[in-house]
Image 1: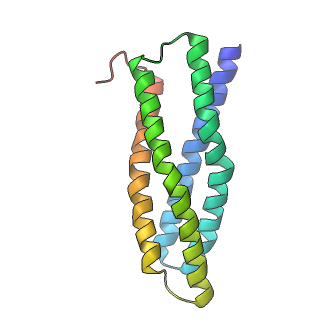
Image 2 (image 1 turned 60 degrees about the horizontal axis):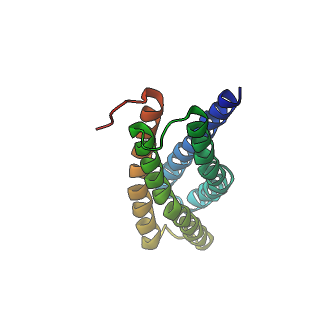
Length: 157
């Protein structure tokens, strides 16, 4: 019974972290492409808030439930799909950490531009390009983790 409860929590946390990430990225991307500083400022405020509320908490809880499942099931950490999943998770979180700072900077730059009635600044667009560049590998890392968690291949490569 403990295993099923922890597995359920693990799936819920994976849904929250991935869903919040995809949803936040989509809305901030669409708002940015509209080039409306006031719209971007509002969306970025919500995205930053959602990241702290959902992504930050599940970024901690997800590996805790994962390692608990590994312990309960008796899998060695050297199991290929587990080792790859852990490595990919570290990569995804390493991409996400600077994204949080970029999103806060983007929010502030958009708010500043909106308050002055100006267009988004070159500094905003630099942050945006970095944000996209970090989001792409994080997205594919999570997609690979989902594959590994479902398929659990004996050999990964």
